[in-house]
Amino acid sequence: MSSSQEFRSRVACRERLIGIFVKTIDHSVIEILGHRTGVDFVVLDLEHASASPERIDSCILAARAVSLPLLVRVPSATSEYVAHTLDMGASGILFPRISTHVEAANAVGKMRFRGGERGFSLSHRAGYFGRLSPQQFVEANDHNLLAAVQIEDPEAVKNADKIASVPGVDVNFVGPADLQVALAENPEREEGSLQCQIREALEKTIDNQGVAGIYLAGLQDVEHYLDLGVSFFVVSTDQAVLGSGVESLISDFKPYLGDP
Image (spheres, one colour):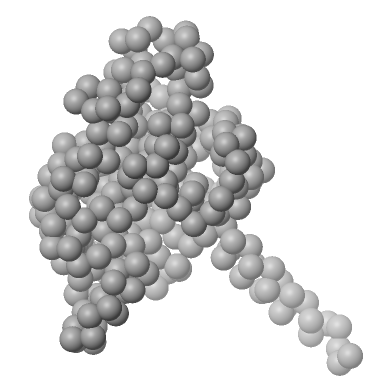
């Protein structure tokens, strides 16, 4: 069983998994996470970070070298990065701003050969540079790669059940920050509606046999989401962990220096 196949199977079985967003697009970050932590997967964030194709490629190669599933959050469902990063050997795609089942189906179609519109080639890492037969590669691609979609606005919350029912959608992933911004645009919504919207999205997903995921900045409310049935967590970012870790170290060290 390949690393991507095993990862998708673990997600489908609702095994509780912890990932982290990686916004520093450098292969050494991926290697450190793979060698020194127990993280289950990483999400390379191309929606809010920029990088050359060479850097992205080296990150995906590093992830494969340390057997760490790597998803790519693309800038949009129509991004050229969908095809490019899958060719490079990514384990799947996280699509931002999916609001309807039609958008979800179109996004999944970008990843699939059968019933989709992914362009075919074997001359890349995902095809083992031609070692796989066309049939082997099509089977591996369409069955092993994970498709996750982000629920980030009230329309997406309303349609979360239909989105979860789209064939090929593996995870409905709630993005609280974008959802909060979207709710703020409607001043008539009562206070506390963010948590109500998050709960509605998660419950609709789970009630329709979907896998529910969410982003958390830390451990706040994690028990609440576990009780709701969330099994797919992305917790914090590499940049936030680096910043807080160094600041904690400096704060602990300063008392030994005395007054300046």
